[in-house]
Image (cartoon, rainbow, N blue to C red; front, side, top):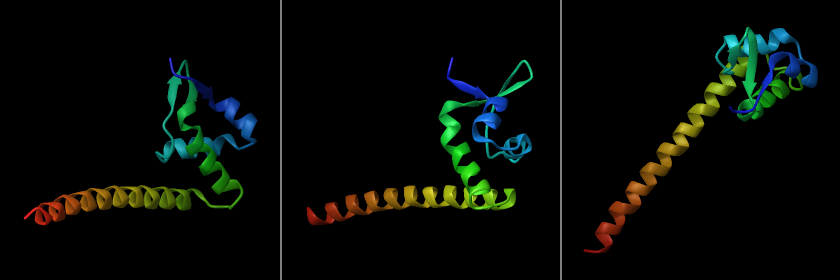
Length: 100
């Protein structure tokens, strides 16, 4: 079984409001597992949770702002991936013409 931490433990450790955690889950920004009515966050998702927590509490970014930032970062990563693919294709095409 993968390592996980309960919502209640996160609230205590990070000194956050439980409603903030629930809002992240309800908005789809965090994925959780539920077992025996206890909500768990997987350890692999802790960096994402910490980023949202820092943005919200340190930079005072509200939930809609977190959603926008999250969406924009995903779009940027997708564009980077597509750019790499296109550059690889272009490199392959240009090397074919060099062989002629």
